[in-house]
Amino acid sequence: MSESGRIWLIGGTSESAAIAREFLKLGVPFVVTVAAPEAARLYPPETQVRVGRLRFSQCEKFLRAEGTIAIVDASHPFAAGVSEMAIGAARMASLPYLRFERPAVALNGSERGINLANFNSLLAGNYLSGQRVLLTVGCRILPSFQPWQARSTLFARVLPRPESLDVALASGFTSDRLIALRPPVPLELELELCRAWAISLLVTKASGTAGGEAIARQAAAALEIPLVTIARPAVAYPQQTDAIATVVAFSRQAVVSSS
Image (cartoon, rainbow, N blue to C red):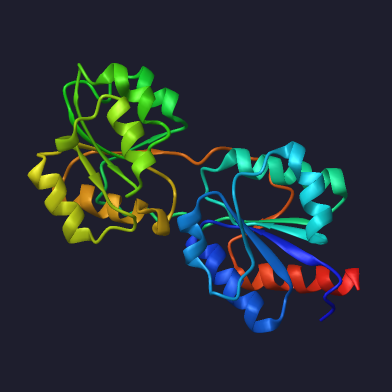
């Protein structure tokens, strides 16, 4: 394959690491971007990884510097802002764009599920009142739960990063109501955590198996407690797939077309 241009792989997820390994195996030229330094460890050592959050105003310079010929967006299902930036950059530069969307978790009949469109629906409702709630929703949304600290007993599982813990503590979570673990968490550990904290309601995001959603669903079903699931943000992707083989075919075609 020609090295005249490269695929921009927007990463930070386990699926993006799998795509990167396929690209390396097949000789597809690419560069990965991730927001946080620890995410760079997902990729093989020979991968070219750029660390840092890109703003839309920086995209034109980045695309030109990297010789970008196509964009593969394998960012987190809830990173809507990243995807919207990438879609805008693709349109601006007339580049092909493909979204890799992590498959949704299949539901089972034993769940006592409450599916909500967004966090506003949860926070404005009465779902949390008087409950002992385990939030497995990431740290960025935790400040929005601060008004509920006096009306419910809130616990949170966050990533093992100082900045995540700082956000949680500033949002009113005490240290005895926090645990720092990277998903996916083993089911037995999730169950033990829920039992130790006497959790009566679980709240998670529809982030897929790799994001821990499947474990949350299994734990809620096993403990016979309600599970609130927040739907993925609605993004108008120009095209998308949940198959890595389709990503590889798209990327190889982009390389051929650019040569």
